[in-house]
Length: 484
Image (tube, rainbow, N blue to C red; front, top):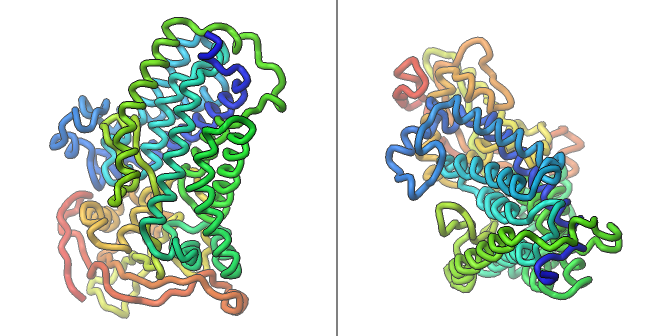
């Protein structure tokens, strides 16, 4: 079965699997550290309430059978430990069947989290991690040659990630076609990074070059992934370079890093790695070949949905077509905001809330807050509350289910919720009232930065939530709104 394996890609497989395991590690650690306030038993969107109304067949998950915070924490930390072991090479130190089982357990644990994560896990990179993780199960380990069919499936996944993102832009906001979207994007993206201010102030002609290069990389280069070598390697290299540029310009969780890992699986490292190990040239076990062929047929059949979506004029972004997230469609930033609005949350200990009272601002870890604070780099770690606060500023509808419970937990001084924040202005006792206001943010100019030391300039726009106090003493109790 010489046609079945590609021994020369043993290093590409190794790099991809180790990088994928590293992404899994970040995902599991983030879930373990953030779940109690978000989806725990006393969280803003509790898992027990969700699984009571959603059938298991629509969201298969370990937690659909039984849920407790202890079980969730144990599952998340177990997933982190297994991912860390795979990143360290444990999968290559055991029989192929055992390695596949280990990858399958990691995939199933993260699927269980995503399928009960609700809006906190409704991001395209969750499905991307699950789809890549499912394919990794069938890549084998150091005791088998990399299966050609799965290597092609990884390229097919990378093609859909890039080409889908390119199509959604060309069909979406006219500024992408005019090459002007990056005049705004670095400033209005969900979570700017420490270099975003500098990217925003690049000359406009360079922004246009950025935009055109992005279109070329997403719409033309992916086709070359299916060309013979070394063309496919050059195409993968172009994708890696583009993704690293995005890493420098903002925080997009693990989307860019996972895309880099997928691209590296398409690189022919033969000249760099030398001769493959002897085990990589052995004929694969029959059962392994049968499993690889079966999963290839499954992916090809399920691919009809994302292909139909890409061909549609009403192309959807980041959609899963099956509850296991096996084959999905991807895309990002079909539209770009021209101005940045942020929801600023404040509290006061005053018994009577007054507009000019002693209101103190809660600080978040990643999203813009106080003007003098330089944005931080958090990716590939995913700050889920910060991301959802960006959506809340776009429209209150995005926050309808969770913003009220969030405010209630601030009023109750809930420790799990406060741990998600960067700054709690009420360390001794919770506030009596909490309010939220919308501010318009823009990056300062070079002159303003030198004069004030501020990276942002902000102006108040409107009220988002009037002063609100807690009617019940426990987190989750009803809140009563009192107008100013």
